[in-house]
Image 1: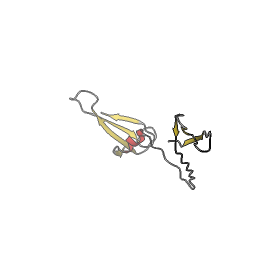
Image 2 (image 1 turned 180 degrees about the horizontal axis):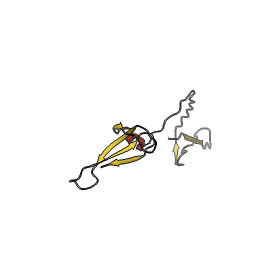
Image 3 (image 1 turned 45 degrees about the vertical axis):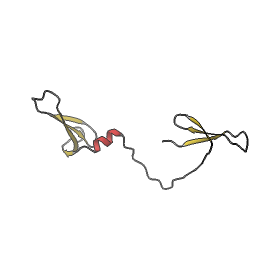
Image 4 (image 1 turned 180 degrees about the vertical axis):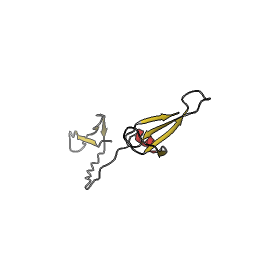
Length: 105
C-alpha cells in the first residue's frame, strides 16, 4: 500500500478544507481532521516479497528429486488423478530452485 498524499486546500485559516488523495488510484476524500505523520526508517533491510504462487509452493511437501533442467536435488511434489479412476494417479514434481515441472505416472 502506498502512502497517502495530503493536499491542503485552505480557503481561510479558521476552517481549512483538506483532501486525502490515494497516490496509487487517485481517489480523493474530504477530511475534517488531518494528521500528518512522517516516519523515516534507517538501516532498513531489504524485504522479500512473496507472491501467492510462491507461498503456495512453500507450503507443499518436498522430496529428493534431481531436476533435469538445473540439476537441483530438491523438488515440491503433489499427486493428481489425471485420467480415469481405474488408472494410477500422476505424481508431479516442481524444482524448488528453477520451478521446472515434470511428472511420473
